[in-house]
Amino acid sequence: MSGGILLEAGSRPASGWRAVIGQVERGVGGCVEIAAAALAFGDIAILLSGVVARCIFRAPIVWSDELAGIFFLWLSMLGAAVALRRGEHMRMTAFVSYAKPQTRVFLEIVAQGAALAFLLLIAYPAYKYAGREAIVSTPALEISNAWRAAALPVGVGLMIVLAVLRLVTRADLTTVAKAVSLVAVLCAAMWLASPILVPLGKLNLIVFFVVIVGAGVFAGVPIAFTFALSTFGFLALTTRTPMVVLVGRMDEGMSHMILLAVPLFVFLGLLIEMTGMARAMIRFLANLLGHVRGGLSYVLIGAIYLVSGISGSKAADMAAIAPVLFPEMKARGANQGDLVALLATTGAQTETVPPSIVLITIGSVTGVSIAALFTGGMLPGLLLGLALCLVVWWRCRKEDLSGIVRASRKEIWWSFLYSLPALALPIIVRTAVVEGVATATEVSTIGIAYATIVGIFVYRCFDAKRLIPMLIETAALSGAIVFIIGAATGMAWALTQSGFASNLATFIASLPGGQVTFMAVSILVFVILGSLLEGIPAIVLFGPLMFPIAHQVGVHEVHYAIVVVLSMGLGLFAPPFGVGYYTACAIGKVDPSLGMRPIWGYMTALAIGIVVIAAWPWLSIGFL
Image (cartoon, rainbow, N blue to C red; front, side, top):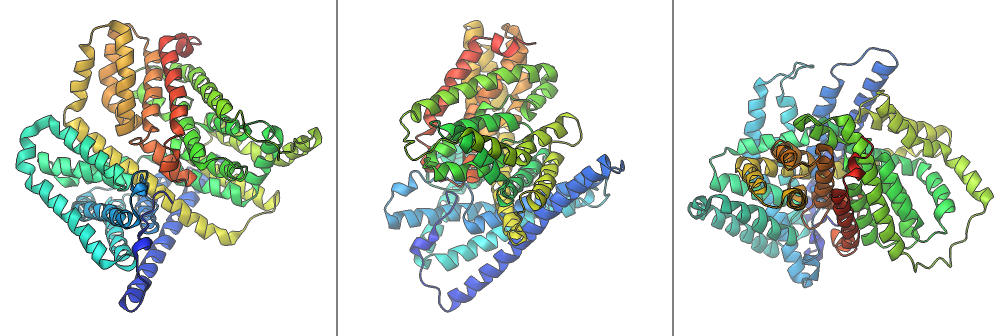
């Protein structure tokens, strides 16, 4: 997969001590996988029990969310270890793939060594952080918070063990020694250069967050470890910040309750496929639009728009849709790069579709009416969806449909009736959120319960033997996604402490040109911020600073909020730095390099749409 570090290309046949170590690696990895699967199942069971207890028995379980949060952090760290063992952490291979085979193997071992370097550097701070949390008691369970925080050092330790075993058993030791030595020399050189770096002041932001991050991403180092290693270097070499603080910020980023929806929706997507619901939906959609050029691409755009915001997480939204549509689209000959490019851009397109967690965050930190934000976000999302549809139409206008037979009305009607139980799932999920039956996190468990019942009693397709592999896959993908979010949160905090945020706001306020200049600069700035900080950290950081300036120059606060959110979404899903793009690649199981070229057509359409929305305020505030 795209996230993989393919060391096997330079490996030797396993024999003697290599075979023994290989057995140890498989044993340790297998135990971690089973533990991660058990935690994923436990999270689902806890959250579903909480919903049943509150809605049916009217007896809420006050500690269910807290216990689920503890399980989730353990799941994320063990899942990250599973992803590291499987080579499924997201990385960009567009440039590495052009190297000669021997050079490519060397660079991939360097990438593994860079990840290992960060893990070794952060291991002791993670242990200290867990120790400090021992004096804190959780509010509901009233147990030591060390039970939760211990997931960090344990997960880091397991990743170190698995990374070392992977290097030893799957790569030529001479090549490993050279690659690891190179990483060690680079780390030592940066450490010795600390006296030179400190006087540079804020120029270090360029050194660490542009040069080093860029070099790491293009060299194929996993994205999460690139972010984390550059942040660690910035704080350790240019400030006096204890590294235990970085661990705390990463913990904070990975512990948002809304992120609980990610593994649950990932599992729901796998469950929909396993129970036959996916086949039923795809059969109806194919009958309805299969004869239209680019028909299933239109379905993908509309489906993301409909489910957007239900989970509160773009990763969860994509995870709920992509596993259902991608197999059929690939079977019909769709290009994998184009598929993941469209998936990523639909994530950016629907950032303002309510109930959007980013809009809720804006309302909470700026005082703007959340109801007004929800009203203002619908039409811009629809407009950008139409812009993507135009690109799909243009690209698919010459698609060969000679092998596609148009379904009769009778076939469409019967396939619709057969798919009704499956098509009802998005309606049930959204209704549960809107009516307050369950939170955005809990609603995914309702979907899982519904899919299980429909699979067993309606479609009669439920293979219990596949549950454990599905739970392991859920843990690995969730760990890779959440670990990136944790690393990005740490980087966002480092940028905040550097004073970068306040300096940027002051600079923008001093620019001439009134509303036009202010909106143009805001779009550019928030595209960049979206690629570096993600939506929520950037809004919390810059919202209180930028919205008063917007008010001063006469920009309507709701209009400004919509433009800002869409701009951040564009940056979040734009390669090579946008985390959302790599999340889409991981969910779609597509090499990021394949989507690099086709995504820019979609991104151009979104950019033009955002400019139109910025220039025509009525699109955001016309229905207020």
